[in-house]
Every structure is written in structure tokens, then in C-alpha cells.
Length: 568
Image (cartoon, rainbow, N blue to C red; front, side, top):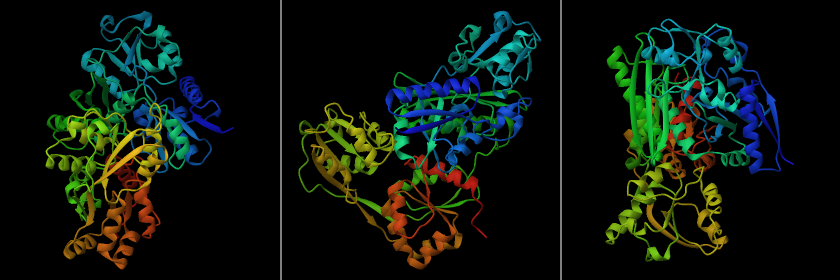
């Protein structure tokens, strides 16, 4: 029987959360033996200082993450609001279960409501976010620090130390203390912390089998909302106790985000909100951060919140095809990087060698790249058709960017895998009702696409029509561009495909390639790209744990924060 050790803080709330996670996990995997190991965090040991003044990120998570990396535990269960946005190398966020109520609760002594509290009353909270939002509504109140676990804080209020306290609704619900709540804090008065009410389940990135098991516990609506909130926090230089409140949620099929940024020096509370597609969760979060930064600049006249440019002074090479490089280059530049674009491949549309099946002859169309969507649509248009003619077919997209490309054409994606690789995509397709036997698949793809997916589908009894709609070709890299890049001595070189790695190496030649891989960080979007880089002699690779452009950017930020400059 497989044994899995879950790591948790020792508080009643943390243990209650971990036991609930284990119970849900064992419903899915009843043959797994689960154990809990309790670990004390720095935040548990320092109880007489406000959290914002302790001065470290991960005050409640670092020791648990250390135990996870050391192999003392297999899974870490965190309150997601405690988990910094920069994940340690070697760990991954494997699951985000369904969220509890994310808002804060007002607990009044003798259940006195906020509106009925007398002028000058004492309210206990150690959160700068809560303090500044409450003072914007009731500037007459005295806000005083309170620490300790949930029950300790309630007892202090009952003893008369405070007239009221503010706690998270989720913790009170999980501990069965709903009766202590006087009333919820409405979002017009107070927005919650990033990730509040949600749990983050970590494991080691190398434990792929366990990660896949944990991923089954993820709640998609919660995941997308939390991704948006954490992207907002990253955009604000989060993890440094930035006083920000945010609530993201799915409403009528759209992702809505409301956020506030509190400025301690002035007491100002700045507001921003946005709405968009769930596939754009992280981009929406970033846009809200940009709105708040712009308002903060107007209010304070400066430009720094904490560290909103974690790639400042880093020179980063983008090797992606020119027509696709813009998104990555813009994201890196916005984070302070000096971007050197050295495109060494290009995609060229080509007509299918065989007639396409009609929509009536297709059950599923599987897209494994944005290029597949773009070039397939172009080919259909040239034939007087359009992809919308296939709207009755079920559509599968390998990742958010591919799904977004389909959404922009007015099409709905029926299925996406939790990880953006063909092996996980196949496992996801195998979950279809009735299995794969007899189902008819159309695969628009590039000439260099792996044979794994169509062959595996055929082995499972599916009927597969492959359609090569574009070629990936090396393009000529001007010698002066190579010389300029070498002269700049880049800190990092990014690769988003095996073909870009091979073409870049060929453009340089062996001597210059060896020089670069010895002196620059080599950053890969995923395992297949890393495998190609390994065959080219790269021993140390910084690989994204989420296999897309946001994941690539995230791991580059982590590397930059952890690494010393490679320039001499």
C-alpha cells in the first residue's frame, strides 16, 4: 500500500484543513495510506509581533516547504493566502480544492454590529489590509494588534481586551465556529486577502505520479480565481505584505475581479476592477495590478510598491519565432528585463496533403498549439470555409493560450488537460464517456509534432485523421545579431520548443553555444524542450513547472531572485 505523508502546521485550523484534504484524497484513492506530520513555522513561534513586521515572506510556509524538499513529507497543505507567489525551485502547486467563503467576518463582543459600535471602540486585527480598509469606513475606531490562534483571539475579545475582532469566514466555518460571527464584512467595506478561503497543496515537481493524483482534487473555478489573484499580487511585488485586497469569482461565465490597494502613509484605499474570460485569468490579474499601480502613482507620485520589476537589470534572450515572440518579450520587459530577440525559427503554412473530413465525420478536434489553430483556420478560409463550421464538434485545447485562440474565434473548448503535454492530454481524453474506441479525431498540427498522441489514440481504437497545416523551419539569424547578443553577455536564454533550441544551437556553432550555456541560465518551457536541450549538452536547465508562457515567466522570476548575477 502506498504511503503519503502530509505536512501541516500544528494549529487546530491547519490540522482541520489537512484532515479534510486527506479525507477528500482518500475518497479518490482509497488504497493510499495517509499520515500527518506537524511542522512548526516561524509564524507559530513569534506570537507577540504583527505579521507585517516579522519581515520575511513565507512566514507560515517556509519550514514546511523545507521539509517537503528534504523528503520528510510528500505533500504540504497550506492556507493559500500564506503561500508566496514565488515557488521554491523543485516544488509545484499541485492542487487547489474548492474554496470556502473568501470574505472576512465581524465578531462583536455580545454580537454588537459594526454600525452600532461606539466611537473610539477597540477593534483587534494584525492585518494592515483589514486595518486600512476599516479605517476608510470608520476612521473613529481604534485598531489594535491581536495575535494567536482563532480561539485565543475570540477569548481575548470576550475578556474585554477588544470590542470586536475581524477573522476569516473560512477558518470559522472549518472550525465549526459560525455561531461566533456577528455578520460578514461586505465587499463594499472590506475585500479579502489574495487566496483567502482557498487551500494550496504542494508536492515536489519530480513526483509526477503523485502530482497527477493530487490534481484530481482541483476545483476549476477556484483555480482560475486564485490564479488571477496571485497574478495581481505578483504584479504588485507581492509576498512583502503588500496591503492589497481582492476577490475574484466566476459570475455568469465571466471571471470578475474587484481589488483595492491600501497606502499606509496616507490611508488612501484605491479601487480597481475588471472582467474577462477565465482563460485570461493571469492576464486579468496583471491588468488590475497595472490599474492600481497607475492610481498609486497618481496618489503618491512615485513608482515603487515593493518589487514590481523582479527582472530589473537582467538581460534575457527570446528565441521564439518572430510572430510569437511579442507576448513573451512584452511580459519580460514589463518585469524590468532587457529583452534581446533572436528569432531562429519561423512557422510557414502548408496545405494538407489529403482532403479534410467534413464536420459530420469528426467527433473531436484536438489542438496542441496556437499555431495549429491559426494555420488551420487560415487553410479553411482559403478553401472558402471556417473553423466555426466545425462548432458542433467537441474541441480539445492543450493549454490556456490555445483555448484562448479558439475562444477568440467564438468557439467553446470542451476539454483541456491539467498539464500541457501530450501524455497528460491522452490521459484526459481517456476519461471521456465510453472510452476512445470508435471516436473520430481530427488533429491539425505542425510537421515536427510528436507521433505519440495519434499513435496512442489509434492503439486505443480511435479513428485519427492527421492534418499537417504548418511547417517549422529554421530562419537565417544575421551574424551581427549574434555578435550583439554575445557582446551583451545575457543572463538567461529562453526556449519554448525543441525546434527553437536546435535552431539556436545551429545558428551559433558549437564553440559559441558552449560559451553561452556555461555563462547563461538556460530556461525551458517544459520537459520535451528540456530533453532536447539535454541532447545539446546542457547540464543545468531551469524548467517551468507550468508548461506555458506564464509558467516560463514565473520560473525566470524565481531563478532571478535566487541566483547571483552571471555577469562578471
